[in-house]
Image 1 (cartoon, helix red, strand yellow):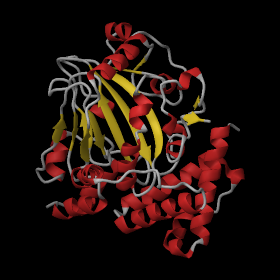
Image 2 (cartoon, helix red, strand yellow):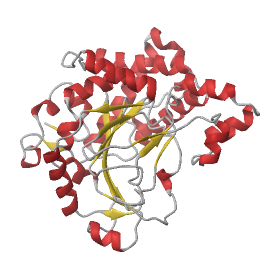
Image 3 (cartoon, helix red, strand yellow):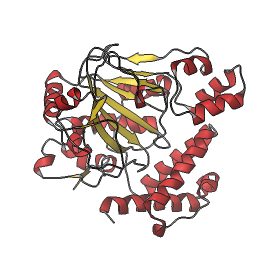
Length: 369
């Protein structure tokens, strides 16, 4: 068993034991009726938590979610010694965190033109693969960006290791001020769950595919994404588009109550249809209007993608975007077992704070001493 898998199993078992023995969290215990242990393995533990947050979400139970976040925060503080002492405070951090709560998104300072050019050049030179990520194909055929454009691919993606080795990516994603914002928004010190980068190729006659159709994500009990545009993104360049105030369970419950039709019909559409059409959104979301997040290259966005969202299809220009996912548990789609080691040449572009508290907790899948 790999070091990362062992560490993840221990984390989940530690949280389970904490919840089952601490009287503050007695209300969560029915979610953990299966008392799993190390013998059950990581997949069983992840399945248990997947079922747990699905149960909370499908009942739109904001109090249960809040209690779970409080339990996780107490567990990592009291049992793992994860301290918030290194985190920042201030009006700017409070304002950005508040924007996330109120609107599902917030803008961060723009990455400088020099850094954007270096990242863009790096990805132009790095091999990538076509189509969506496929966990059953860990070693896809790799091509240059130009080759995949010529093959008519809809998208082209980069391997995780190549993304974290890109200059400025981990520095930007692990900035103490950003981790402070994430802590306030998520309710506990975040874990970085994924680094990814991909091209969406412009084709005027292409059909929307995969994440280019409206949907919402359920990556963790709470989670949030950071996007960095490495190309200019106007309405023809495939902007991230979302329905504000659709990420909090209480807000979704109000939308459900306002629906004029049958509540069971609304539930079936919302909870069981992964991809949602524009017509569906107009009908079931009572005429609410989406917001498209356009921006020049270097624009950096925080988005809670439990809100309903999609990436518009780029029609005039290719889009290159970096995505970083933050969550509250090690609930990864795919475990990454090749962290950058402190003091090695690969870590030369990564600041020391990434390897120190709380950055070392936030990045323990991707950077290690």
